[in-house]
Amino acid sequence: MNNFEQRLPAVHADLATEILKDPYHFDFFGLGDEAHERDIENALIRHITRFLLELGAGFAFVGRQFRLEVEGDEFFIDLLFYHTRLKCYVVVELKAHAFKPEHAGQLNFYLAAVDAQIKAPDDKPTIGLLLCKTKKRLVAEYALSGIAKPMGVAEYQLVRALPEPLDTCLPTIEEIEAEFSQGLESEGNNHG
Image (tube, rainbow, N blue to C red):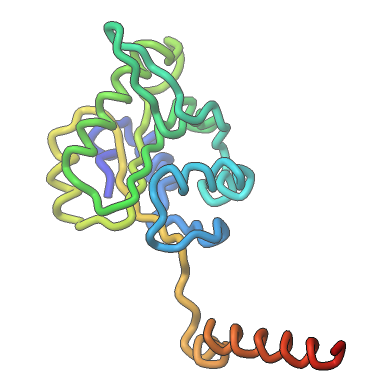
């Protein structure tokens, strides 16, 4: 879900839509679905090369917890990128839970601040990407409908479900632990 067609020139809207995926697959992080935002952010940084590949071509990493100061108050963008083909900054905010309309307001604020404080005159408008654990399409659509800045909302998946046949062929954690315990017991008996 995004508002790129309404907020960007057609050429840029098409390219921005191409770069926005939904969902993003972060199963290479090794995190479970209960991971917190900071855990996800830390994993993104540890695996920055794979994360950039998942985002797609043209993304250049600018910073993590990128500091903005507005009237003496500090604000921190989760991740800041520059897109070389779009010629614009891309603000990425992570949410470890479902999308809420107020997330769009926070992201809109960050986009306005980046446009005012960081963007060069020849850069295109900054784009926002809100990555949430889940989203309801209509809630996201309504939240973005009145926002003047270009932004998208996408889901991420930390764990990809295994295909059914493979899932039933793999041992459970309990079976692995039992096998491991039996192996240790028999090893202890051989050395005793």
